[in-house]
Amino acid sequence: MDINKLIANIKKKIEKNVPLDYIKIEDKSFIHKNHSGNKEGKCHLKILIKSSKLKKISRIDSNKIIYKLLDNELKKSIHSLQILIE
Image 1 (cartoon, rainbow, N blue to C red):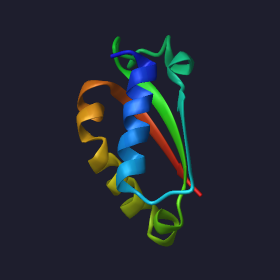
Image 2 (cartoon, helix red, strand yellow; image 1 turned 135 degrees about the vertical axis):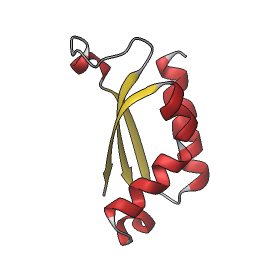
Image 3 (cartoon, rainbow, N blue to C red; image 1 turned 180 degrees about the vertical axis):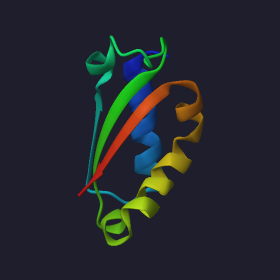
Image 4 (cartoon, one colour; image 1 turned 90 degrees about the vertical axis):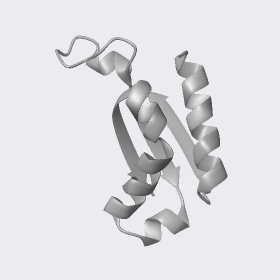
């Protein structure tokens, strides 16, 4: 899948399911390009979310919410996901 389309789909999915003030998704695949574990067709993403709801719960629970939402994308298109919640 095209990385821009993937990012747009992820953003839409999170915005639809999590009350938030801000979201930014960055493709960080270039950083891992020559790593031995890097798989073709899989990307590395960094997601910055500003959400008072997610900030009120534990980091583990907030990450579980995002991982559950992105289960399909994680299986097919994402090799690594960094989630930052403010």
